[in-house]
Length: 235
Ligand code: MN
Image (cartoon, rainbow, N blue to C red; front, side, top):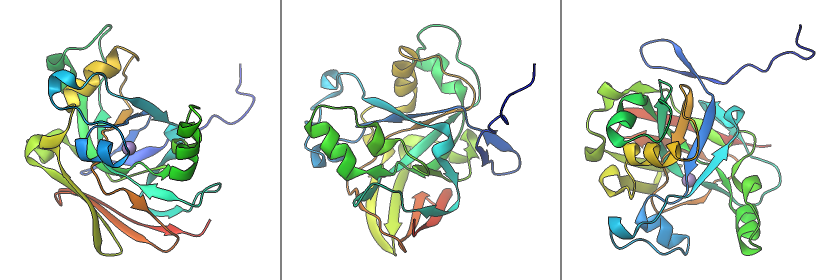
């Protein structure tokens, strides 16, 4: 049998040192830094015991943008940046719920990305108790840097992430402050989904989210180990 339309090709993210990482799915964690949870008007857990379950949502795999220009999306007057660690899975998870020791070796590498958000659409949906997919899942909603392998990043808990817009520091956070670590997030995701090679996980943003406008230049950095530089262009 032949395909009746041309088969869509997956987005491929460049890997430092050579090769490309084809994207299968994009999972995102909703609240993973207490300071951002508070700025969004949500309660931040006082301790790990009180943190409950993480909030997840997804973006389409073809929302991933690799480098450079990002067109201002339609349907919004309030596009927001959320700088986030991006975790890239290099292996299929075994069946069942993953414990942290099994989860960690699934990680191929890391990048830095932006969980771009049409905040006005998200806020309007939230206020009505409706799903907020249109605020999060849209074309070009997931700019991602090149990927670097785990060994090149080293101890994640010792690292930080930062976003500058037009040279001004907008967001900064330390991975030591994550409410859920990478293995803990993979454990929680595995209770809901079959994780596979090619999956990305956006790990949540620290405080300081704010607007991006056409012409703005951004630099997202994981301690200078890996950077994402780009510009918002007219629609
Ligand atoms: Mn986010």
